[in-house]
Length: 320
Ligand code: A3D
Image (cartoon, rainbow, N blue to C red; front, top):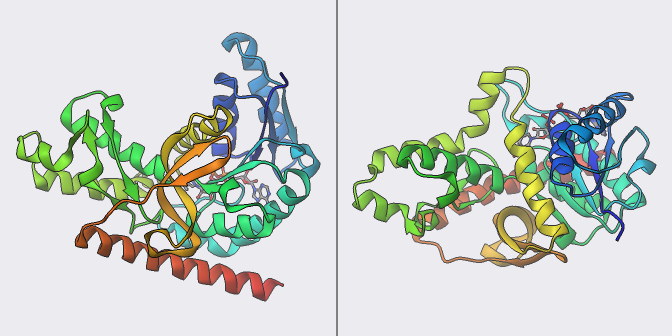
């Protein structure tokens, strides 16, 4: 059986980490693409030279022409610019909308059958632009944010409870931004929901509220520390989990930015919800019942994303 092909558009901090992880996990052959000539080729060669030591077989290539991504089974998009201290994800919208238009056209021409995972920020709006320009079906284009946001939540909870990260599940919905909605009721330690753990004295409501806020600010915390860019190890791990679920038809239930057509009262744009990812792409959107407070928080997040989507529409029509 031929190996799968994974194309990484953007060979920066996340792109390079994605290539290394895809190699280590033997997900397939890997092509890095970037507009800066030399960088994708250099990273591809460097990682290929690690393969004898790590013991994985993959063909790694780099290129600056879209033909390099031809026939890819999975495309992961990180092209664009990340934020710097003091910037919000939304400040990137002008430059990254233009980048998504170029990337979407490249995917349309060379990888129309791929499963596409967008990471570029502001995520919920950028994945929408990418889908529209590429012309792919909505179930084949998703955004990575919820896996990362819930991984941060899981890590902070595991640290608080002094239990394995493996036994903590977390549920984060909504847009990838300050309005994201971590849901305590559906987050658990080995199946015990967080509100029960508060009642059992494992933590206080105040501490839990602080952890939820730290999760919302998780990206800014890393930007503040790094000063030159944003998080890249955990974002890359998160997108690889999504790619693996697709390529191996694992049907994992993962929070992703998915195109909604009426679910959660949202129509025709992307927002973070739990989905099942398998060989057909997004195979199911999981719709849970909200309490009144949860609904209010989700609706606030939806309104924030809708504002960004409208901005991209204006940017795209003025460029046309
Ligand atoms: P960085 O290391 O700057 O890499 C971006 C790469 O994109 C650079 O190598 C650029 O040369 C390249 N690039 C720019 N324009 C184009 C183009 N038109 N075509 C192809 N390549 C291009 O950034 P990064 O890897 O740290 O982050 C990439 C993106 O991911 C940024 O927009 C971040 O904000 C975003 N990000 C999202 C999350 C989410 O959870 C959604 C988390 C972390 C970062």
